[in-house]
Image (tube, rainbow, N blue to C red; front, side, top):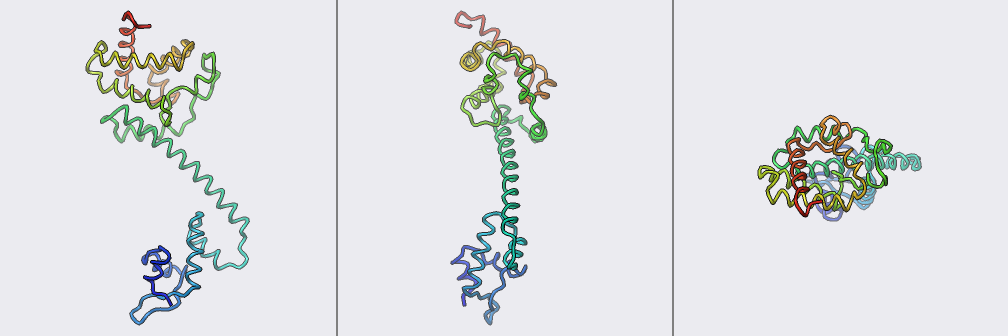
Length: 247
């Protein structure tokens, strides 16, 4: 007979959990000490191992109780249902992961202005289908250019650099469009434009027109960048092009 504390050490299951299993009838101890402490035999230890295994593959305690009590349990159907549940959960968690990455990248852009209201609006917006998937709407020479657009829920280094550049632009926007720091940011943006979107001027003009309209940006599920930041970018880019080394 093993004391409940010994079972805890051997199995890693807490005393509180063992007591709970007893209360719901899932794992009833073989006996108790004179002081009322639960005692277990090797049979209960074996059953506890079975409970831990079934929990590890996602079964709920109520289902585990039914499985252990039934001698004619339909394992094929049960495992099929469990796999379906796990796959659905995988998709759900993947969606949550994407939302969290977008929110973290949004924080990199908006800084202290990234409040709960914006988090909620972005999460709701993320439930909609993206119109960027409709490739026929875009004037592109190479459709792969759509895959190179900065993605707010990506860990791709190019996307993260675009996000960082936009965040810097917003951080230093009070310096004005002609300030060397702003111009340095614009220069790097233009370098990346040339690397990632060379020969796609018509597409970039189309995208910029949508970006400058808040309603169209929302319709296409583009991240909501403040209008004053976009206007600063446009003005700073015009000044950049006027420089002798501008393109």
